[in-house]
Image 1 (tube, rainbow, N blue to C red):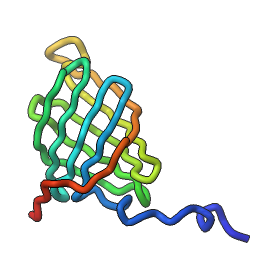
Image 2 (cartoon, rainbow, N blue to C red; image 1 turned 60 degrees about the vertical axis):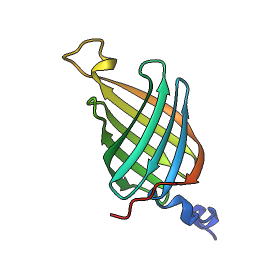
Image 3 (cartoon, rainbow, N blue to C red; image 1 turned 135 degrees about the vertical axis):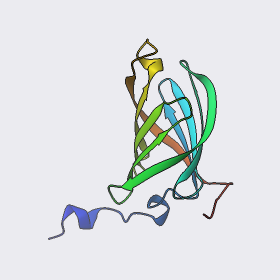
Amino acid sequence: TKTSQEDAPPVQTTDTTLVGKRLHLRFPENVSTVEYLSHKHLFWKSKDSVHGSKEGEDNYSAIRIGASVFFVNWVESDGTTVSQVLDLKERTCQAFLTSHVYSGRDVNRGTVTLSGKITRIEDSNHLLLN
């Protein structure tokens, strides 16, 4: 008899890497685009009701935790920490944003969690080779 793993459709090679990809993410109150320029550098832009529109280039860390699932983390220039669990096959994103903006005070940091969808995956236009 076949196991459920044998019945599962094969993971596409486009679902097994972040480098060279542009992901369009949609959350209930946020729309973001993230381009993975290399194995350690990304560009992002985001629009939400808290920050308005902003963008940046940052170093990131990523760990592949499943065939098409990644844990990604970076710190933005304003100190906001972004941690995401991306499932490229299921096209889902769980995001954890930690910043003083979410605490209501300048001295403390608060965290919000967002559950969203990857609405589109494209090839990145800006690929860095180092």
